[in-house]
Image (cartoon, rainbow, N blue to C red; front, side, top):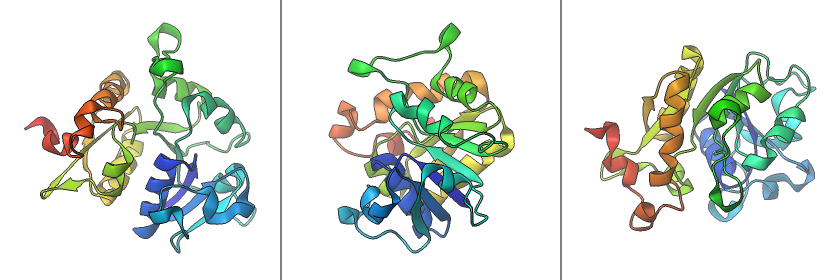
Length: 222
């Protein structure tokens, strides 16, 4: 797949580097492309990018002048930056594109920031990018699991949720490629379930501090 990564910190950098290593074509959208690999976190020593990865401006990462068009866009910025990051991609950039939302709607003090009428983070992202096919994914675990999700032969769970069944299948494939046990949490109302699991599997969780295998042990809850 052709993947654009918007937000090249630990989450975006780790996922994008791994996908490129696994054979996907990845473009990291960064503020200063002249920095090259140094603008992308998540590598061993944060060194050179995999052969199938490169950097560009955020807009060029999604739609390049060279004919590049991303099939999938991962947004992995801090929550306060999501709106501006998506708007900077330009009109029509996300039309029909699978938009993987790896963010969590957390404000100062890790306060949950619900939208109007209690809208989830994914619903808020969908409102910001109404023509995209939003799937909530990769927001329920830490970067150690993203680097290696298999423990004692068992894969860690990765939940994903969204309205579009075909887009959910893309998320399933990309999660499976990484080695996760990908679990479809279904359409809109299921998003809250996917969102809420961050508390027991995120890098700040006390459960994870004792070992990285929390979600692996809970694989499919059976």
